[in-house]
Amino acid sequence: MLSAAETLVQLAAVDAELNQRRVARERLPERDRAAAASVAVADWENERARVAARIDELTAVIDRAEAQGAELTDTKTRLEAQMKTVIASREAEALMHEIATIDGQRDELDLAELGALEEQSDLDDRLAAHLGQQEAVRTASAQADDELASAVADIDAEVERLEPQRAELFATLDDRTGRRYGQLLESLGSAVGQLEGSRCSGCHLDLSAAEVDTARDESAASGFTECPQCGRLLVV
Image (cartoon, rainbow, N blue to C red; front, side, top):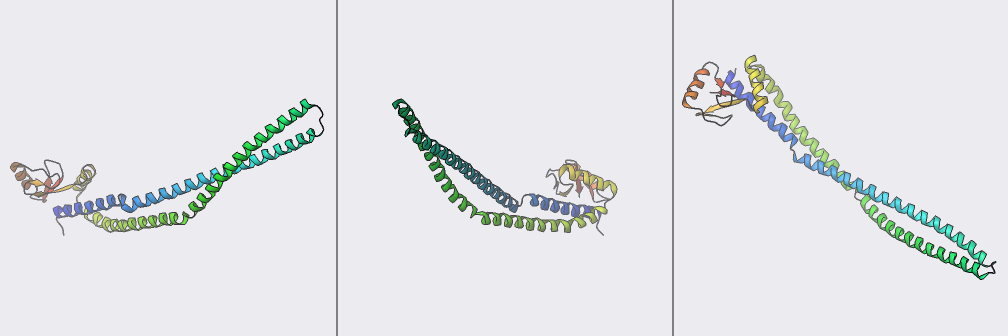
């Protein structure tokens, strides 16, 4: 059966290992890779949506240009028909001016439609290339997630192995020591130090000769006392 001092040393070692595992779990490089892969998927989706939305905008521009062009053509046809029936030169000049204005408007529409068609064609090619990357981007993200899950599972398995050991060790401490151990673990991150020469391994501070003597006297029965420097349970 372990002594109280030996139990404290082993319990502190198990808690240190558990803490290392939990810290490692949050700092896994696989976590960063999974996050980066997730961002890549989001960026891919945002780009797809942006290009598709612009293509839709251009489609609307083209449709409006064609509709307006058709209206202008109808108006021009009507005016040209009127030209054949007018006699007065002033009325003919007015009709010719309207027809010229329509021609100018139609030219502007045609240029706008052509520009929209060219941009839309470029975007169609870009979207096709972008969609071709979908499988690779999503596969990379899924693989990164799987690698993270595997790494986390390995650490969780270690934690599950250590926790019963900790519970068994902690259960052998008396109530007062257990409470003090818990308080120190919460406030300092570690609850136990060992006297190495005249130094506490917990706070790495040297005890005076008188403090060393006092520690030895106080630990004569249990094998431990409290460090006068940091308050940790000091195994002598």
